[in-house]
Amino acid sequence: MNVSKIDQKLIDQVAAKAKANPRLRMNHNFHQPQDLVQRMLNAIEPGSYVRPHCHANPRKDEIFLCLQGAGALVVFDERGSVSQFCPLKPNAGYFGVDVPAGTYHTILSLAESSVFYEVKLGPYLPTNHKDFADWAPEEGSQKAKVYLEELVLLAKEEMGWLER
Image 1 (cartoon, helix red, strand yellow):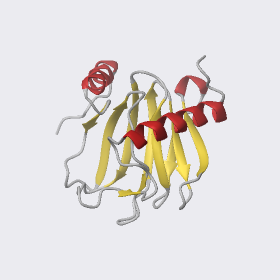
Image 2 (cartoon, rainbow, N blue to C red; image 1 turned 180 degrees about the vertical axis):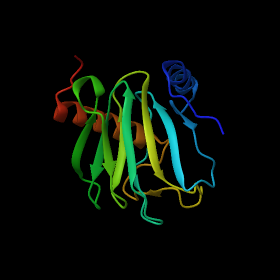
Image 3 (cartoon, rainbow, N blue to C red; image 1 turned 30 degrees about the vertical axis):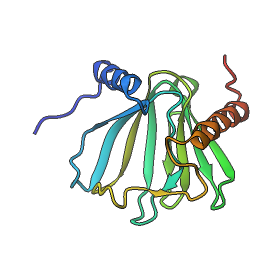
Image 4 (cartoon, helix red, strand yellow; image 1 turned 90 degrees about the vertical axis):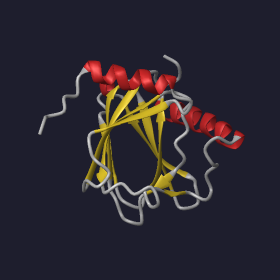
């Protein structure tokens, strides 16, 4: 069994694939679908909408570490109101977040070529991977685009990252 290296070359490759992807994001999985722990690089470009969701059934905690770039994890209450912004910006000392199972959240990219390391329980089953929030617009809709723009503005204001 070979050890998987996470180096700048790999990060750059995954970030380039995210830029070329219509969804503006790309995973690089270190796990197999049946593995008990999912481990991946998640490259996310600004403008990519990750529909708010939780991992409630089955219950899965989730960890995000920011390896490059900047972002924010947004936490919501059950009704869809923002309850917390968690900055992810390693050069400012904000390295990661640990998200408890059942917590509604999304991740925002606030800088080009942002790459996150993500860990959560497996196995990966597409049928129950995420519990999408009923109050959040569906990916690909015009409402999702407007919603994402509003979340990004709120995050930047809340965290003081307005275009500097």
